[in-house]
Image (tube, rainbow, N blue to C red; front, side, top):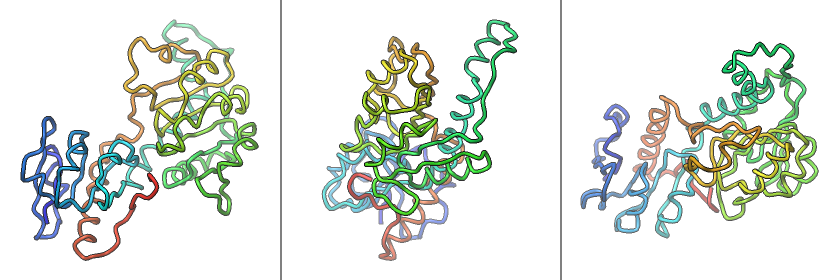
Length: 301
């Protein structure tokens, strides 16, 4: 079996693959070579590789090391199995969410600005996470990791997922839940159904002064509606993802009041590739043994 990975994937991440696996590498820039195009199993860490998938006649499995698959899904041929990296990003993203909540409740951006101005702002009173209500929209693997990290803080959780189940609400409950939440954490994948989910009506239903923390995809949020809500002081926001992305230097979101932006790095970590390729090795072994793969994508996620 031929496995295609990027040329910058270190050999240590591929140790332990079955002997019958031939590893071929695609370049970081430019089109993949003919040997790559004959691979059955691909780990497309670059968009140029995703765009080549429809030219791979022997392709059977596409395994991402990203949790979201919106960037690769349109390129996966019919009949080819697509699997995501559910679980790989849980630690890093959940820690980013915890940081965003603490930054918000402790007023750290304001305090950093006072420090820059050499002002001793003793009158600013930080709040506490204890007793706050946090709504997780997109309660899956990462949502459970967020919950585990919030547990010691005494936070009340509202969980919302695509399908309701015990302790988890469905999307239809959002109009009733949003006014109760002090913070809303977005962990949804980007699909046609979720695109623009956070619109003017969604934002108007949020509790005044609540935080919107987006660690999912930028296009989940109507940027114009968010800008209006920020300028009106109705909400605050912590954004790891934006629409558009990268955010242009002259975009008004950079200078909007009450917003904290990071450049799509919530899932980044020195351990990311080690975790991701541990999953790849497990998936390759299961594929060769004829076993069902983990994290197979259905209905866009």
